[in-house]
Image 1 (tube, helix red, strand yellow):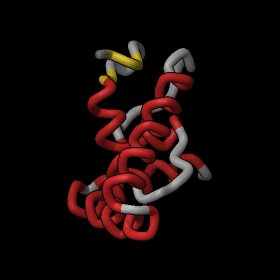
Image 2: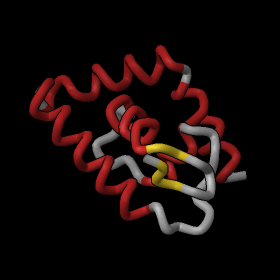
Image 3: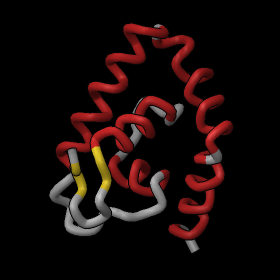
Image 4: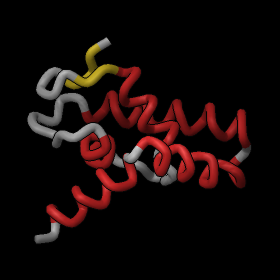
Amino acid sequence: MIVCSCNVLSDHEIRLVATRAGEPTLSPCQVHACLGCRVQCGRCVRAIRRIISEAKQKIDVTYGPASEYAVMAQALETTGMMEMVADYEADRFV
């Protein structure tokens, strides 16, 4: 299902980023950055927050809170998303 119509982001893509993120407080802006875009109209923010929350709960149940960060950090590094987030942060503060 398309969650963000401005950037054509699906719930599957958002859930994938949320489960691989490595941050307990991932924001909708960070999700967009990982997917190579930015929040535009903002109508999707509430739905993205809900998906992030659901994904975090599933991870806590599956892996436990202590191992969550190691699993996600490894996944981010493997997929190259870590560099995308770093590039976004660098651009944002210039």
